[in-house]
Every structure is written in C-alpha cells, then in structure tokens.
Length: 282
Image (cartoon, rainbow, N blue to C red; front, side, top):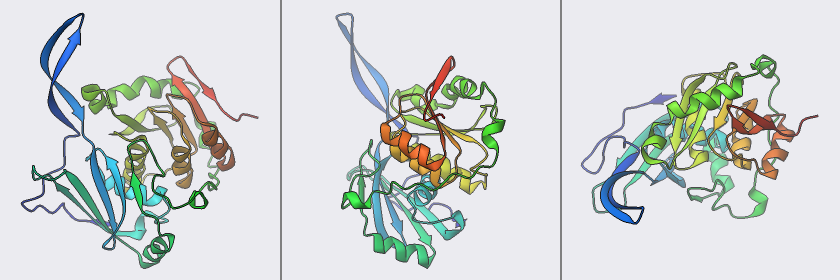
C-alpha cells in the first residue's frame, strides 16, 4: 500500500484537531456564567473508491487514512491491506459550506468490481453502522471464524482490569470534550498499545484496525477494548480481521453475543478495574 501526502489547495486544511471551542453559558446552583467549552468535531467523510463515492460516514476528522483502511477491511470491501494501492485524504473547510472530508482510495480491480455489484450506498449517522442498506437481506450476519492462535490462553488474569485502568490516559479528546468513544489495542498483559477516538464507536474501531494494518501488526495477537456498549457491528468488524477478544465498558446486545459465539470470539463487557462479565461461556 502506497499512501501519498495529503494534497492541499485553497479549499483544503490540514488534519483537524478533533474538537472546536465554543462559547457557552453554564447554569449551576441557580447562577449562570459565560465560558469557553470544547466540543467534539463531527464531519461528513466521503469514502471514494476508484473515483466512485461509496459511503458517507459522520466522523471526527482525524486519522482518516487509518479509518479508510479499517472501514475497507471490516466492511469487506477489500480482503487485505495490499488490495489498497493508494490513499489521498482531503479536508475541506472554507468557512461557507459544511466542513467535510474526502478519502480517495485506489483498490484492486476485483475489489472494485465486487463493490459495484453490492450496490450499497451508506449514509452513516453517528451511532449507526448499517444506515442506508437497501434491504434486510444485505445485512452480513455470518462472521468468519476467528483462528485459534493460542492468544487467549496467554491473556493475563488481570489484563482486562489493567486495560480499564490505562484507557482513560489515552482519551485526550474525551477529556477535553466529554463526548467521544475510544477503541484501544491491548496486549496479553492488558497494556494499551494504540488508541483512537471518534464521535462514532464503530469509526473509532475502524481507525484502530486500520492503524494495525498500516503498521503490519498481527490482529490475532491482542484484544480490543472499547469505551462503549458491544453492538453487533463492533463484534462483526473485529471477527473479520481475526481479533480473538473484545472487551467493552458498557453492556452487549443480544446480537453481539450471538455473533461472538458464531465467530468463536471471546466477548466481555461491563469491564472495570474491579471485574467484568463474560458472555456465552460453556
């Protein structure tokens, strides 16, 4: 995969900070005062494959190269990172039109032909991973089986507790705004190695997976820790790239549990420093 530097013209800006400052009026204890506050950025991000727009997702406009790689893999658009030949990221904020970004990817012809056959055009909202599909029949609910590499046997007994303890230190944008999700990659001891934030939990996971692929990390030798509930698409995305375990701070859904079982993926939720809940145990 060869990725060139972001092109810049008069309508384009550098990568965004992930938050903006806004004037607010705070009301507390019967009194009010004007102050400055930080708010997480949410932009439309168009994913364009071989010149054809496929999806528009609402994202925090940071780490969009990693996001595009992760999305392409977890949505089954490409089978491997090497199917992506080139990526160009454009940020457009001229002060008049709605700020937005475009990510242009060049993918192998086989992947592009398959993409056109799917006729899928997402209009993704912040909290939804499947908005815009044309029918229920297009839902992909048959996960790949996660390979047994022996990783789960090596996970330390306190790994999840350690991940829960370390994650807040990697949530800079959340500390500033209070409004973003995080997805972290942890080793067998629970140490957080990478973490990404976004207004959408599935976007944060795509950014994380994309970064792992760009760094040529083995996605079967670690686990995902999410500052959100475990919804089906998060488990589905993780299974597609062979992640053996997903841990979430909040609750799972019934479909997430079912897909984790089909995939042979270990799912734990309500993950805290004091413990966690494991699902679909024998």
